[in-house]
Image (cartoon, rainbow over all chains, first blue to last red; front, side, top):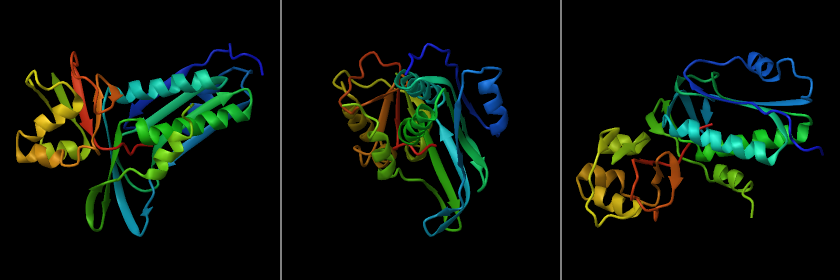
Length: 160
Length: 83
């Protein structure tokens, strides 16, 4: 594999507004011809949580730290994989099932790096980026509890 | 120093942020949690399970034994559930 000397722009946004995946991919790739793979992950507000029906989800974040923490993870991703671009957009506010919550785009010459980096970034967003979800259902509202399986997913990327 | 609270920690404490001046005997995050817990029932409730609480100093995650000396902003929050 060649050394990753290609430019790797990193875009991080935390916003209330929705995003357009096709547009974000077009911005990421632009007129470049060195990118051979773009992986996109889009997290969506889901209605079913176990047996409960979720009517809405509210996302709260820690302004300032959230951007810095995501930037640290993006920097780690670009040092671990030969990436040509990264876009991370996390929405905050109140969402109903079906609405977009998070977008991760990773671009690389080859698919493997793009797939792995996207998964790495999502695993860390779930467990280490300061965001919290509150659910609304017929039985009231409550904060979503962290899942052990998310911690395990993030832990597998830790280098010994 | 400024202290910020998020999610259910914020709801239980009853405020999003405040400025505090802990005594000189409070050196670590863990000790700060213990000191805050003694302020009122609301704080005691927020920090009733101190091992569950996550902390950040100046926007970076820290462990409970981290020193608070020189910190501008300390945040307390539950395990994160973003993404």
